[in-house]
Image (cartoon, rainbow, N blue to C red; front, side, top):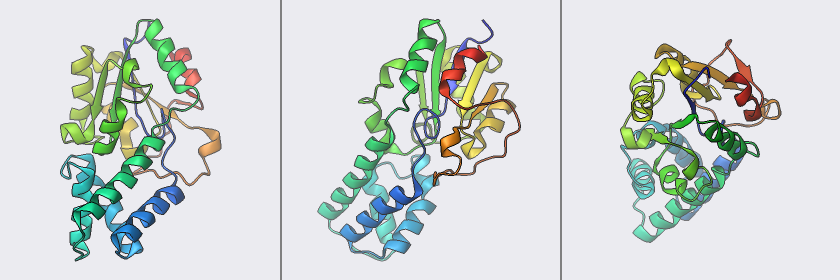
Length: 228
């Protein structure tokens, strides 16, 4: 067997990327609940992604409070909790597996490969994770908000390989190319492959720092076993 482990990205890979329109709709609903200007709230929420993704804003409520403070708005605790719940509910919906995700992961496990996850995400994802079908299918999960670093920082890949007990050179990495993750994986010695789903190429997918990738690519997770 060519590889010992397959490491996946989450958003845009095992699950679809956020829809820009749906994401902004949820943020607008949150802003209405908090009685703050929606456009400014959306801008500041997006601008605080790094803080969310590295754990600097450790709870959904902390993120809501931070943005409201930046807007000069004092909001009651019950409103903050309700707004945070709206965001959490959206995250739960967003981690619904693609139709071929669970099947692909189960197949890899049946072949004796180790499976890992590296995701740039906020705390909501880690809270929702245990109730997803993914939870039992991974040997190692590395969430950026838990380790305090984001892709393409080489340390986040090294954490995954060390916990898996494998060398980067024996790892296949599958991702949609956000956060320059494929280049990051390549630099530590992994074998990165872009997942480019044709139906999503022109969709309003919310992707952060997407890279131009000229290396290996697949159009479906069902193709992953053929790479082994």
